[in-house]
Length: 313
Image 1 (cartoon, rainbow, N blue to C red):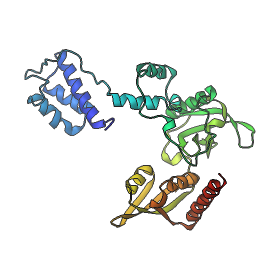
Image 2: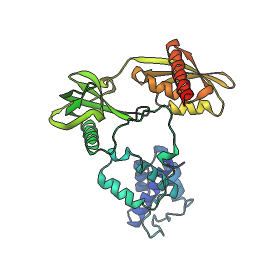
Image 3: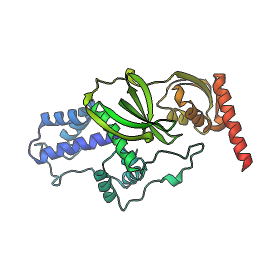
Image 4: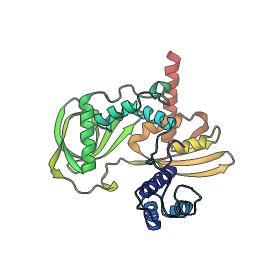
């Protein structure tokens, strides 16, 4: 595993215990306290017992240690390569400050990324994605992100679909990313009505410190009509495993029909339907749409369009 929550927790907990021992403050109670705070409830039976019995020869019976240097958790080369890959993602700058980005670029200057954007070719993806290098776009994105964290409303100048600029106040609730469109959208409330705003269409925005919203719950989030699609999966080349990973964030249920065939039912938001069709098609002949008929027809239309495009080349 590249990054492990379990092993990292164990290593960091033992590092805290060793640091405590180096200060001369360690005893049985403090070991229990450190394990309870940093690891998992049942971890004391593993970590505490292993240290106190000498199975892990890091702490002596008098709770001192022979380790002189402060324990650290240096990153492996693989971890650094993964971080360099994330750092080079064009969307990374939206979520961190310029100071953090510059520091990471310096720390990882001699590291090659695991892969780059050029290593992937995405089919059926729009080319007019959001302008991630635009300073105004970055500024507006961070303002909205801050407003969500602070639970505050935002004043905005917004360009509508017909090019008209509107000024209004909205409450940002959640930011979503569409891989098909390569765009971020903000699920919002405008005058107590649900709205989905494309962040790239925001000309200017600022947090309204005078207006603080109440607590936001899932019930408050804008939503579209719910829809369901049923798929039959032929488990060749680990198709079922890949489907479960690809649609991990969807509400779903699955049953096994025979040794190599499964039936998967997905619940999704209607405004994500086009993207869902594209993702289903990416599995090729291993997946068959069973119902509803309307979704079957949409898949056929998409395949016909692809065939026509290929015949013109």
